[in-house]
Length: 122
Picture 1 (cartoon, rainbow, N blue to C red):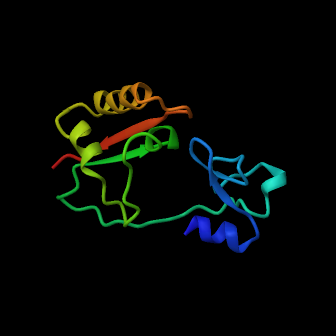
Picture 2: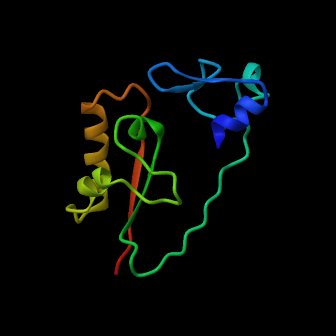
Picture 3: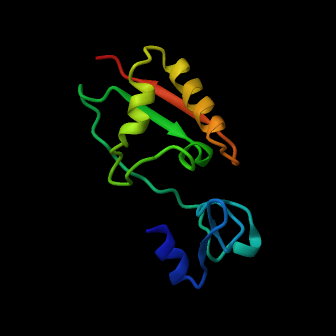
């Protein structure tokens, strides 16, 4: 995974309020940060998922949300029940995104919080 890639390159990942590359950077993929360039890559992680009638919504969010709300299991987009419980009862995707933002803020997220909820019509 990301941590292994960074360690294989001679870097390290540590917990400092959130997981950080070299104890500094909270992302493992970035364009800048020259002093960490050998450990941080700009190549995206790409996952493909078949979209069929069973898909109700998709949540795209920054780590400010995922740091404080149980995120993806990282097993090909299976989402924890906690996020589903917040989003599913709301019919309006904008309201669902705002609810997730409020929840992350209330739980003390210390990172930027961005969220988009895409609702699929069945």
